Length: 137
Ligand SMILES: Cc1cc2nc3c(=O)[nH]c(=O)nc-3n(C[C@H](O)[C@H](O)[C@H](O)COP(=O)(O)O)c2cc1C
Image 1: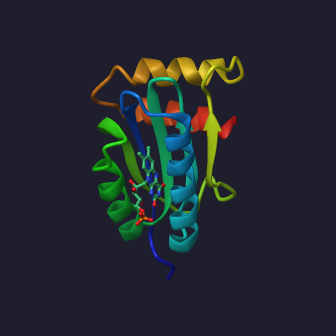
Image 2: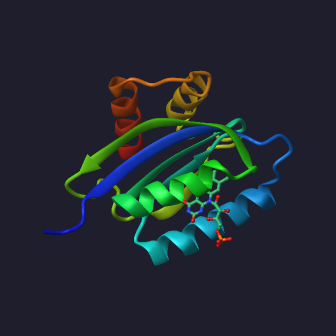
């Protein structure tokens, strides 16, 4: 049997004063490490929040998330959902970064991220809504 896969989504607040260069560095680190680890997913950034979905071997995703959650480049990291999946739902994303900053494109997704960004806890419905919106990217 193949290793169990985990899909983990979180939302966080961008650290005050974080520059676009620093965001680019995060993206590079994520791409490089995730490729090596066999983790895929997507990292979205708005003017206020990060939203990231990670998929991969369960233990690797959990360990990586602990490391990411302790990163001072963001704050108030909140788990939206953590669920086992039979197969990757976003297999093609080697952690593609979609910048939603200053852009009318994906305004619906941006609005949802800002709304969810104000919440501390999330229901299964919230998680489903986010997964659905990410699928439409
Ligand atoms: C919002 C955010 C998302 C991140 N996403 C990832 C990621 O998907 N994979 C990863 O390895 N590191 C990610 N990082 C960086 C980690 O927190 C950490 O700095 C990095 O993994 C350390 O890598 P290094 O050992 O190559 O220096 C992220 C950081 C932030 C702030």
